[in-house]
Image (cartoon, rainbow, N blue to C red; front, side, top):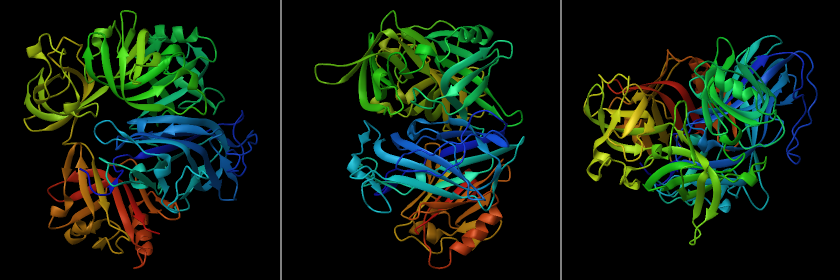
Length: 638
């Protein structure tokens, strides 16, 4: 899957700004950004205002860590008023936002018609680790390059990159006592280039791309983190003062979280559910750190939590924390790969999470164990090879200087883990896979010794057994690629090897199109350019240095299509994310209608401007060679 120059493709980073109209209260006012101060001056917004809900998310890709500082997120009204929606600088690790949206802010902004947006990012303390398929490679600060200047982003004078988005094609309207939605897409796939390749990376060149939609993406789970303000068992809800990611003080507004009888809780590493959990939450001291995971309902404009962490269950709050994948286990000692570390003493606004390729963890009888979204009693025997988990304890070093974590008096939070593979056999209560990966790890990295009830029953990559529970398996014939989400079976108790909660068949999953032309690009990529379709012929596809359609972990070569590739808008999509990005000026234009998008392309492709890249997401029909897109970005080399 590696080419000489590998683009970060699969990572679509979505920054959603959801504006719910409300009057009064504290919030951000107007003012222009002062890059030197890293902050705009707030002004009270006491009337005719809306509450700006800002979130970020990401999909899995070729970065293990992409930690940068978001300095500013501004909206500009048609009258020139600039509104800062992010009142404090915030460290964001885009690579960790897989299938997740993080609430950044819940402050207020004035009503009006907004015609542009801009995000300022500081790379001076960036931590970028490329996933090379094994241990990960940390990119030196001097090798994170500004694509416009060819100079390092971190030194000698740190550069704050400002990405600007033109909303004039579809103005973002905020009115008093009304609801408006804006979702921004900072696309890491189109924004980063690794050279010479992802297997041996030395340089990451950044040319940022920003696009938008006027509809929020509600398909992703949402996370909100903050200090507890209050909890009400009568209304089955609680309120947080938002502190995103790693912030330990300050506030970016208040956020209300609804709960149900099915909401699960881990409070100080003890599990509970429903009303009992909310009651325990209400007994915590005001200011206790809380993290809630859940979903946004567009109809009711409300957020409901499925899982809540509080107190010492929140990583890095009371103990050191390590998150990663179990590679092997011997007794009560196991090795965690691609460890993301939150040292307790570093949990402040300027904290920068650390990364280690491996960490050795020790657990014991007093280690408290929980499983996300599950109730019951769990022990350290539930920790097995392949499991994704988050551990708390005390960080240290062994005699060789390697990272260790003593969790004997700490906790282990087992998180939903992904298993991918090809079906070799399927029955009502058991599916057998030829493994492609567990939690993103190649099977060759995992040592399955001890996972079975006997050595002969240890898990194997060629015949990995999954219990599908109540999931339908009638369509899972031999040779079908699938992805299960769930938990690895307890250590020493296989078979089965994995207990599934949900199933994704790649027959129904969306495809990712990657096209990349060598500099300076191509001035005429489309054989057909109409209001209903775009066609790229076979010759043009073959000219692209990188031409792939990814469907799950399978790859299709579109240049093999004699009739070329046809791109049409997906008629079933709730909204379209369409954009034209200008790589050298770091600006982009946003479109909600396919016809408007094509009209702008016809103007831009005047015989001089060259297309460097095309990234698109949608459902692919291999019989007709048609990709029905709901997201598409055309990057111009200008």
